Length: 142
Figure 1 (cartoon, rainbow, N blue to C red):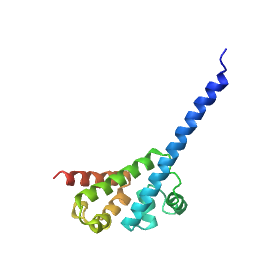
Figure 2: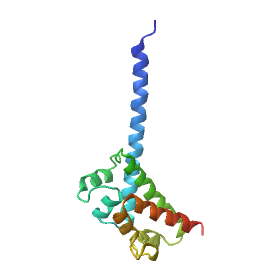
Figure 3: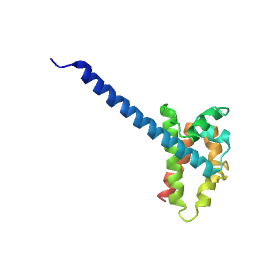
């Protein structure tokens, strides 16, 4: 008769290994987005807003800067994905002007009623993030 404990231990080990890898991936995402915020020269309040955090939640930002895993909520995970896509779009739109690519997020834009993309995201939340991303997605294909 086969020992079920050995089989269960093996399955449990595989689950824990996947969780460990996922945690490392979320930690790498956290460091990437914090580096991006540094390039964009955002205030801590702006950084928190873009991640969907309370403005006073500086401790989460400090943890992410150290590489601790980004939150497991779908909202926060998707926000990071959209922020990185915005960065990619800007690098593709301005390949020879990195300064402009980094400054764009804080520059007033007629397409957003003369608000900055950061202000749009702060005002509209997740919907604002999608507005900024889709604007850049379209701009790449014009």
